[in-house]
Length: 330
Image 1 (tube, rainbow, N blue to C red):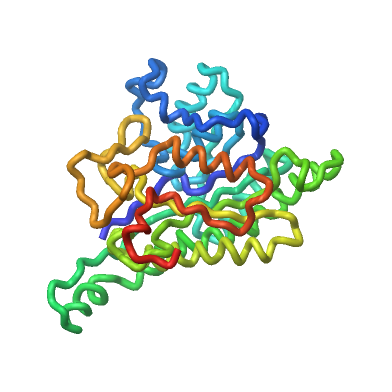
Image 2 (image 1 turned 60 degrees about the vertical axis):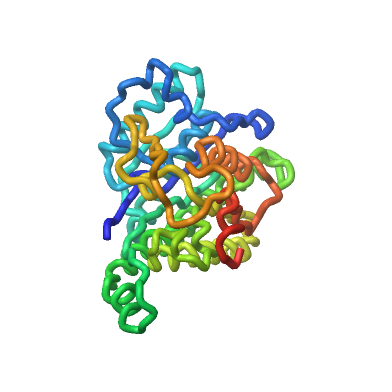
């Protein structure tokens, strides 16, 4: 029962210099063939967090990434900042070590960012780990189901996954509210309202198609993971309602299969990009592209949510039609 913890779990945009019209679905990770990135020796933030953060940086955003290992964060931010400089992009990435599961850490991280920035524009809660996997029983007996789904799953699996995937984002959301509110007030001081501000303050949650699936096969056969993603999906809409008086939006992204270390462990290249082997089999169907979504798919969705003024309380499903093939409540 392996636990996979991405190094970049929280993404904070403190400044965006591009206008919504000029935002492009360009990710620095798509430039792997560029000579200044070839042969880089990186142990980097992988997966969806990398897709989002590098796309934002490529489009002029100042991005902070929170993760458990400062050395890993320093390596990835240096290489991609070098790429931004070579490409004459104004965006930059910065890493800060932290444990996004803890209330005390949420308070500390918000205070640390406040020392560096007057405000932030968008907070991405992007934590995601998966453990507590089971194998479907081969016999239709209560004993077989208990052996597969009860005995093989530890209490610590639920504790660890739910605390990371669902509880941590709650602490972080409220810890960073003052910095999001300051962005809104800065716009108001310049005579803008929610309809004319360049970017409206926002919190974006990364949930999963597995928050709505009825087939555990799409969620890696992990009920702790399914429970946690259901929780963050509901939190997105309920927090959006709760924060209406502040004028701070809450939206979500529900990915399906994307090439990450969670979906295809051990297949990450030197740039932190995971490539799904052509012969890898998954226990579910993806009607469109069998190798999953791309950097461009995820990056363009992140840009859409950041630049849009009118979407609030919505989780956008980006799964290639997987839940059209499998039973779900979406």
